[in-house]
Image (tube, rainbow, N blue to C red; front, side):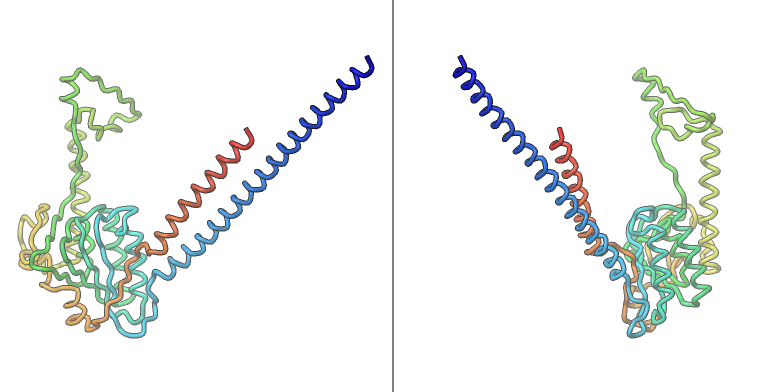
Length: 322
């Protein structure tokens, strides 16, 4: 009997040792996983810090030096839609303008246009900044239109001392619009009921699924007329007596560059090189346009990779501890 108990204890002892060994290995695996997880997190953080430093340097390096070796013509491109978050936003263009005006070797500032327009607010901000900087630095400003300078783009161009175009450029569109759709008739046919709850009887007057009253339509019309008048005033202030006495001038129509010269919307035919060579007398061109550099684009891409890596590390940590 005693022999059987001893054998049983021996058997249980072996099982206990095996279980203890398994537990110890499990604890060791968990400690190793934790150390590896923290190591990966530290590596990602170091990479992130490095990319932030590279991005900061790229931003500085992407800007032209304020002190140039010789006289030159400063060029700022206004390309695409003028709006918040776009390359031609007021923030980017104003930063470029300030850099160009403050550069001692820049003999003049040329705004190079390829834009259909955009936000009247951003255009107004840039227009006012051009007027302010011209008064401070006494540098001439020229606008050169390549493909298009319409609507908000022409709003900005009107602040220039002179505007030059190609004969086939598209210029004008001095007007304001507010667009949308109305689906109330379709909803009636389909038997759909619109349930819109507002605080303020006119809060939803631009809702495409609600009917528009005559009073709301008149309010929108007055709003557009007010903004249109601001546009007209800016153009008249910038162009002065050069504008032709044409009723359709501020109707929102567009014209070719050749016709724009006849109407007084532009001063002559000429390219960027022509303006720099013949008017500014400084053929060397320096681009002051604030734009995302190659390094910044790479940094952003790598930054996204870092964030993804940190996310995956967090996901791995959660998996380990389950």
